[in-house]
Length: 251
Ligand code: PEP
Image 1 (cartoon, rainbow, N blue to C red):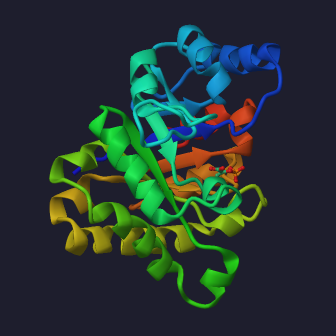
Image 2: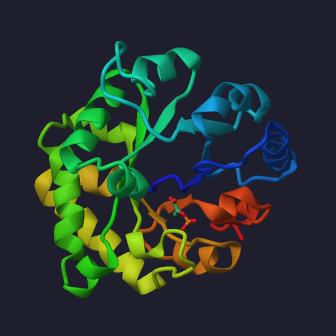
Image 3: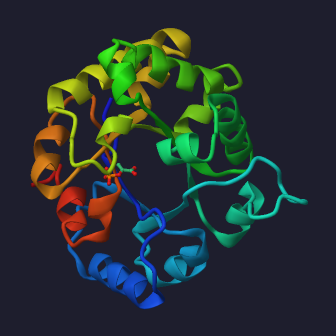
């Protein structure tokens, strides 16, 4: 089974001007990108529609979050239906910043994932342990608990719409990247867990991407690991080196 390499760029709450956003898109539009890699960028919600209009067709667009209701009195939220209507194909859910700063638990993330898929969106579903959890040997238990909340309400056909992003919290935005062996170990254990908790077919076909201080210089070795199917990139997605990360598999 070959899984298409996937590179996502999570711009988070950046950049802070439309000019800077245009400059980021220009870099992507003018670059030579590996046609075998699926590329998805997640700009702030304010920029979703202009980015959809400005970015080359091969680059897909994701929202960084959405709610689970289709519409209504939910001030400050975006619905899956609105994203679908705007032509946004992907949404990032369960990012560690949403979990820690905005108190989203795995049950809520699962509910949002259910609603997004039911609306026809694809989901980049983020999981990962804190440093304390890793140091106390709980990495796998944490990742499995985070996934299980969705597994419990999933249908077999959902999994073709999901990319799992394994993002150890201690590696996000810290410059401390997981070693290729650490990332590979968690990805392989997660795939083994999916084989028993969902199905062998899903475990084989679902893409598990790594996130946490990925740069042009560490992406090549990480991309060579058999269970690392791509990256979710934060800080480096705002720099020209994002192009090298997209092309890591080919380089
Ligand atoms: C992220 O926020 O998903 C991320 C991986 O950030 P960074 O690459 O900056 O560590």
